[in-house]
Length: 416
Image (cartoon, rainbow, N blue to C red; front, top):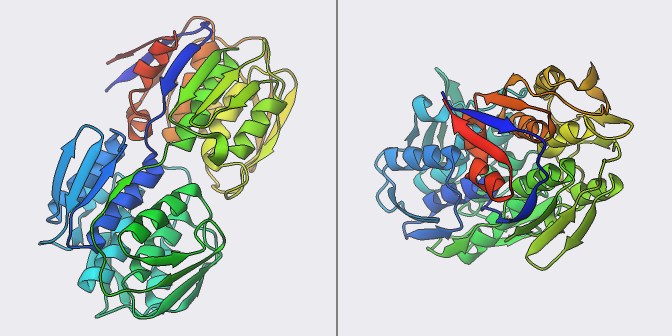
């Protein structure tokens, strides 16, 4: 099993390009199921989650052509409308094939998903929405079974803000009979990116980016070419790495437009940040100031950046209070950061982080994707060597992480 060996104490400096967004690419690739014409995507990141989804789509009969960062999908002759447990178990986003398959083919069989162990992430909102649109949905032996000759447009109100739920129902509604209104919809930029692609395919969608999305169903969609948006969480992670090391880093092919809450917190911590049209330039201070935060749905502070900010607060001046409101089991990285000498106390969904003068390198274990990133950031500033185990989590969401860090001067290498 691969591990990441980091020798800390280096100030990051230079520039790197940000990859396409994993959380945008996954629903976009599933959207190709909605049409019999080829759909091409550019700026697709090379990640384990992407490879898993492409294997799943190929297993269902989709023709997959993958060259560099471009992927072309042809779902004209789907032969197997089943998403098997063997592939779905490793990645929760696989549930995103449910809505498109049901809408276009009238039936779908999708295994209940797995993924990171960061708390309960149920799919009941997906199922309730499809049932409201007229589908017969049941759960049998670990599979979601759905059937409907044609879905009907209805008014939907989700009990909670759910990104994948919003995306699944929005895709399903594109081919429904009538108009669907999704209230309490997720507002994330990845939802907007999906809507823009669907509109280019012929869908009639308005309101993406707000909490009310309207979709007027059409008879069919056609092919298109779509460039995937930059990864805002990867962007935020490298901003935190630069901030923690007092670095001077310029990130290319990205935008601060998706990261207002993160940028504001980094500036509160003492960073100098300049936002350019397609780049962000950050200079970290000699020592950061502690910043408190509370995670909430977009456009508030993202839960996917909580772990990275816990890491930078570990070496900041003062005490930060972090409140996690999205997932109930997302402080597993705290114990590993404590192994490096961090002063962290957990009380329910609240973490109290008091900065220390320095961290000490040690062997640590990644527990989920963003926890992995927090351990890398901590390792970059710790004295001595930090060995991060189970980095297959990192490979799910960060493209060429060690290569990009090496370009910025970090002493980091992959080992097993």
